Image 1 (cartoon, helix red, strand yellow):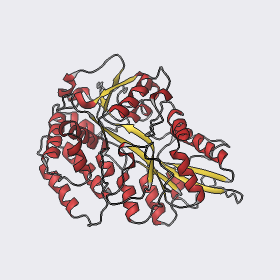
Image 2: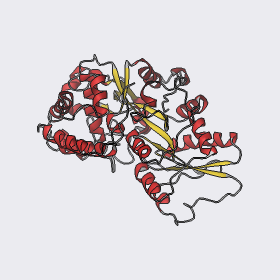
Image 3: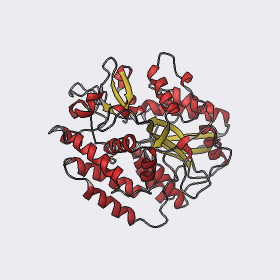
Image 4: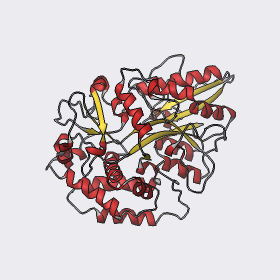
Length: 428
């Protein structure tokens, strides 16, 4: 959700998509030359309050690295803006992306710079967060911010019961998300597959070892389709609804124009709820999604990963700083609602005692039997895009047998070049 960023002498203005694409744009968008300082450009997905917090973190880096200035450029179209810069031969020094599949593709094309061995300590970032392309020993990215996805949001004081598994009318569902519409549906399918078939099957599917027409995949699509077909208008409404809710509102869960009281959305959803965020509480999805029984002990997660596109001593120092415990703790707790870190040192005690929701989310991260990265995020870009497209096509007629759509995805997968990179694991 895009909001205006802050301005001020301590942090250069957050530049939007227009400023990035117009090299000869107005003076307000142009970078100001400073021959006395080394300028690092950082591209990321955060705007508004999130960008303010990240800007304050970068201020701390500048203070401890005299002679370096960091220009942060925030946009919700990070993939498109980054690709434009790479193709033009002018990528940012560092970029933050939520999709490891894209970063693996950049490694394959020799666009990313390898991280020094001392940038990330394996003991600090366990689980799936340091997963890399199969057969590769070098590291090229690090997790800056993470989210828990196997959760269901509801209003405090109104906890859901198991009957929610059968009643689609209670759920807030929106597929709209600008150029990436469809991913909220892939989240449903992924989480259902994880909770019903387990982490081993999920990992095999996400890393390309399982066919799209395999029983666990078909089963997850059918369960979701049957659920969404439980009300004549549910699927159509989802297709015409933005997952962020109406503009200027407080998300779908707190939209007064909707009668739903449950939302399957990641821990980042509180940033969509605005002033109503303190009213939101959550429960694990393992007992509330259709076809689940509460016995699932794995959790789906996602992350925003920083990677270095232009190598320099200053860029390496920034990557090392972003991975540090001090930076991770300050970044995670420096905004309201707070973020979450994959760093093991950022424990629940980093959050205020009265912020029980944040502390419980941290416990979910730490106590889950397995953490599994968002499957579509780790898949090659071509597969991710057709996955999202077929989600929308399936939702247009949710009573259809999904096998035909899954066969189409499988054919695209089989047509990928033999050297297409897949991650070695999705589940830690």
